[in-house]
Image 1 (cartoon, rainbow, N blue to C red):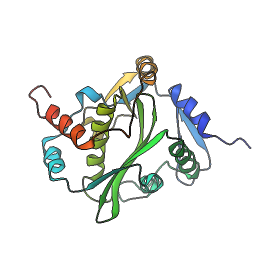
Image 2: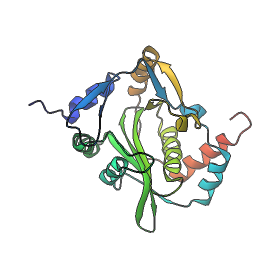
Image 3: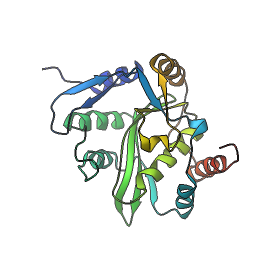
Image 4: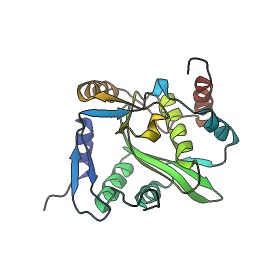
Length: 217
């Protein structure tokens, strides 16, 4: 029986392909290479005014890479708004292996010692491939997303891949680009040298919020 490995998964991402399962119970993974790809432009990321106020209140403690597997498990949870997810056991295994190898990262929102929201994704060079996010408290995933973008900008990333565009992501400036354009940007981004963990997060967030509040944003 063929078993997908973490190195194979990295090669797929480098070629512009990503996997998903039909459901958490499914034992199969399907590969996707959309004709149009969703991205969040890092230089034109929009932070709604109400969210800027929330971020300045700092309602959550932000951590990075401190509970990666717990974030995936949170994303895999069924909720009233999302009764079915695509994260099965193979997804959990593979992305945990990528995290152990330094190719995956999580952004986490904590309150009173409890994980209340976050997101995770894969990074290769200057490309970050966003996978999933979750919230157990209002606004937690949005706060995590803004902190992710602040960190990617500060660390020298060039591409934030969202795979698809949703109404939720459109509020932050997500757009679709043709497959050929996506692959061009992906190739250029992967040539970059970045340091996801070597960022002053408070300074990075302040820079992003200042840019978001400018008249041109």
